Image (cartoon, rainbow, N blue to C red; front, side, top):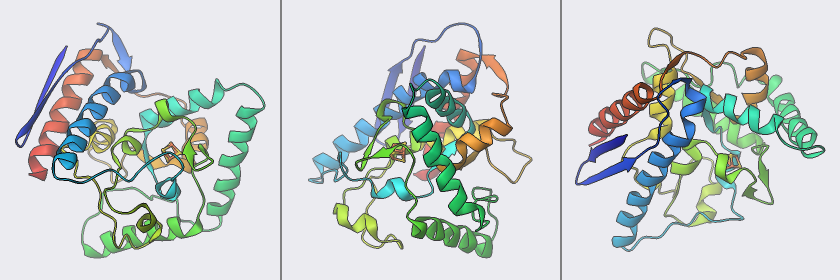
Amino acid sequence: MTVSLQLGEDSIQSEVNLSFESVTLPAMLPAFRLIADQLVDVAINNATSEGKSISCKKGCGACCRMAVPVSEPEAHRLRDVVVAMPEPRRSEIQQRFAAGMEVFRQTGLLDNMFQRVSGEQEERNAMANLDAYYATGVPCPFLEEESCSIYEERPLICREFLVTSPAENCANIDGVGVKRLPTLARPGDALILIASNPDEKRVASMPMIQILEWTSEHPDQGQSHMAPEWMGLFAETLQTKANNML
Ligand code: SF4
């Protein structure tokens, strides 16, 4: 299937191999990642042609201490990744998740962390929660020696969150001095949107630290549709969001 997106002056065309069968969203992740990586490549080329460079590199994991929003389909996929790990690594990772959750359990911070906000007050509260999360300093359980230990499997948001400002600025909780690479579209948001129920305030995502607990409570991987249908919906959502960003 050919996926074409027009993003301002840029356009991408992706050839994705899809099986003609009914699948759940986690099974679509390899195809969604392909498009996300292509979008990031275009954004990096644009930044490079403006004389900017990407500061993110192996050994810098400042953003891996933020409340990284993981969509429900990615949470299921990552749970499978953890379950497939050999021992003792699997137990180590599971213990990191459990220890992180213990920190947050007392705070109530994770309750409805990501939801549709309406009004300035709700927006301010949401920002304050994100700051409070970052202030705990709890790292993503997959962060090892300040590098991502599941690089090929990292969520869409981790692929698109890059900065062109000095790496040391990323330690600023208030985000002062952090210049995020302008993305042409937000594949992470698009996936959350298509996985969400439009009638609910809650959106289909959670902070990374919650994924093992949430998936053990919600083992159902969601609706199945034909793979080209999911891809069509993803592309349409991406295009609409990109148009709104222009
Ligand atoms: S999955 Fe990898 S890149 Fe994403 S927050 Fe965790 S360690 Fe960082």
